[in-house]
Image (tube, rainbow, N blue to C red; front, side):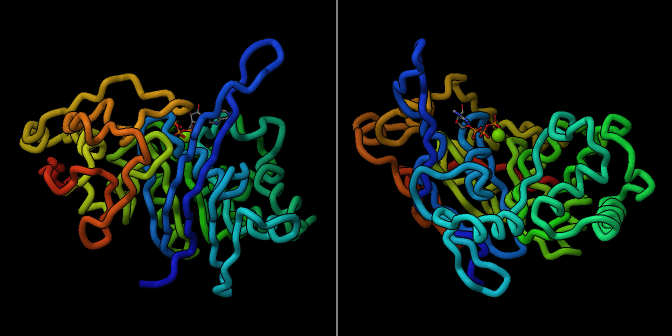
Length: 344
Ligand SMILES: Nc1ncnc2c1ncn2[C@@H]1O[C@H](COP(=O)(O)OP(=O)(O)OP(=O)(O)O)[C@@H](O)[C@H]1O
Ligand SMILES: [Mg+2]
């Protein structure tokens, strides 16, 4: 196995919860609560989980848009040297921020309406002192064609474009500094179903052409299935399962993954009716006050009182098979239901 491009160890990100007139801190949201994760060069690693489980926070701390509270983020640069992203400062940090870029979710709000495509896409080049003037314009024009837009749009404003086209602009902006690792945070969630496949194909083509590694964040397990090599499942700030995509979908080893999979729509009625839908109670526990023991026990159909809810640390990720890890005390007793691969 090759060395990972990125390795996260026991990462924590906490946000203060403030109350009252004077904004007194009354607690902390544990948005990321002890995550371990490795990303291999050239792969697409999916990151899934319900809203509020910490996906965006994890992605943004990897890109160092926010600073983690504790833990290690080790990045291996093109020369093979390891850098600790959590302690990098100033020039080192700026260089790392060139190599790790984020594609944001909403193509409507993430583009400044008063900037032309040249300005929007060229801004990172200017901020990082990479290019100016006609060189900058040439680079932006080249990137526009790469993402499937005509360079004649250079001087137009974002409002002239559809959602799919704006997402192409977002992708161009993320790639203009020639990053190696791209965090794509729900890159197609805000788009019409009809244009999703085009953007996913574009991301795949660019990955091949430019040798990119993706952390692909999504709550849509059908999309993740179609684009990811491996998948990591997150619950209340923790990683509960990681496995190659086929393996995770057909043989989940954590009850939370089983519940998420049971809700994946399958157009083929034989597949659709094969499984039963596992309803998760709506109330995600408060991430400022997570349940004791396994944090999923309050919603888990298999939880055993006196074992899964015993105060103390939540179960750690343990190896359950080749490339497969799950954080469940009962994983060896349970035979959980997966779903058949989507034939398309
Ligand atoms: N800047 C912030 N200040 C305070 N709390 C925050 C902040 N950003 C995120 N949180 C909290 O951290 C937790 C994780 O949020 P995050 O946005 O990372 O989740 P997510 O998995 O990306 O959700 P979604 O699927 O809705 O995008 C949530 O409880 C959220 O309310
Ligand atoms: Mg998010």
